[in-house]
Image 1 (cartoon, rainbow, N blue to C red):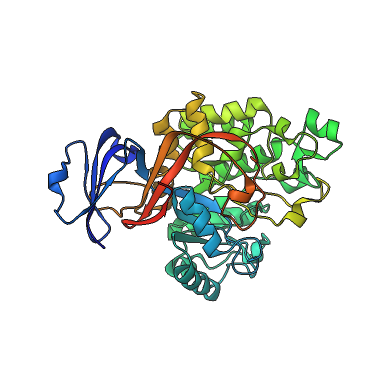
Image 2: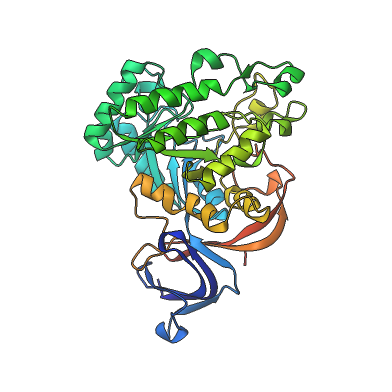
Length: 430
């Protein structure tokens, strides 16, 4: 590839505490050669391609820590090609893929298959997870050491939780010895049995079985208590309630080291948005009260929450067009992740720097990958967006194979204009 120079860009890179108007030179190996306000056009070679960004914002390519790819086994919902297209249209260049495929990614042969298939078909950086337990059944640990050696970035049972405390203690002890990342979904099954919505007034009005946020809080309290004895790399996939934040704050104050994620859906929607049985808003963890949503935003401000994820879960229309209790759980969101997060900037809920930090360098640091930064010498994975561009979400225009978006017809402000991967333009609407 030829050298490129991007000019007239507003460069925001939290890893360097950078927010300035400047230029970026990308060398012919797809690496950042130089960046910032001191970079001149004359610093680039005479044969380099010049791209005028006209004041649009440039950030590191987004790192999404939780997305379902669908392949193998669920290609009718999503596959590597359609996931890549949706991700790049949303400025996402690195994806942590979940292991709940068919078959489950819980052995070396499946890891080899998924890495090979992803390399051949995906156009983004893929970082696959394996399951914590065999078949995600919560009974027997997978071979962390072997799987890590084959390229697994972390371990998660996705939307299932390790219920057995003795097993969880052994998992943490083993993970500590091997320096692997455990990503836990926090939900007590006894308290959440048969539930499909947050417990409260909305659940009562709709006649649906609700789940209290205590089901989330109890697992977090248990795991963080174990973590004080078995200090491994531990990440709470998604929290959804004010009560969980109180537990997190207490433990972080006591010096317990762990990280926390939140879905963009729980930051931007609440239980009232479900309306009259809108099944596309049936999520796990469920949408909760407005008080909880506002608390989650404060949690990001106060560094109690480290990462914002899309929780991208494609589902076919037939599985969603069912009574609420029987409908599939989840929504797509990788393409709208950034734009929906920017809503929190435009309504003065969060600073732009904080949002970008939670989408780029924070997940990279947790995963221990060299992404989420525009430092000199790093891969030129870039997301370029118009901060003010208004648009309306239309399911039929989204690039995911499934169309189960939770924010159909939502008016957003801020849209991705171009995405670069290793210095190559892989998406552009300029």
